[in-house]
Picture 1 (cartoon, rainbow, N blue to C red):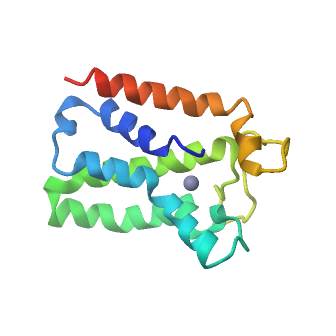
Picture 2: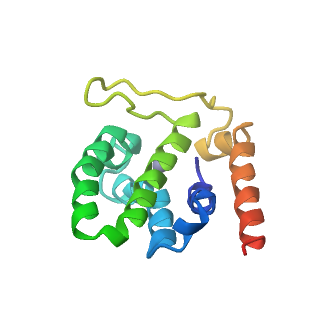
Amino acid sequence: MITAHLPAGYVLYRLLPRGYQNAPWILPAALLGAILPDLDLIWFYFIDERAVHHHRYWVHIPGFWLAIAAINLPLIKVVWPRFMPAALAFFAALLVHICLDSVVGDVLWLWPFSTEMFALFTVPASHDSWILSFLTHWSILFEVAIWIAAAALFWTRP
Ligand SMILES: [Zn+2]
């Protein structure tokens, strides 16, 4: 997934029950969770010099976020219960991000039990540029559909 993570966060927010959509900080939490894993691209390009696939960084590993959620959600529920909906939206958006990445990108779904990476589909290197290969692959229609859904939900918001 190249461009549709942020609109996917918005779609997630809009699919929440109406009562939750008004919870404090829930929209920023959903949008942040939707894009947070890809902030590792800064490290990937400017520090690591593309030495390791960025989907191997901890922010793209579902098992890591599962552990973080298991530790933090009970704490938030006790200490800041009014922010629990935002916290749930944040972690749900993270999961959506990683699921969307896994459509045509490798993800360490079984970490820490395995370091094998899984993707639903593989994008063949049809062009010299990886981005052109992705942009000309049928899976780009999935991204377009997410953008259209987010735009439709935005323009029809109550
Ligand atoms: Zn990602």
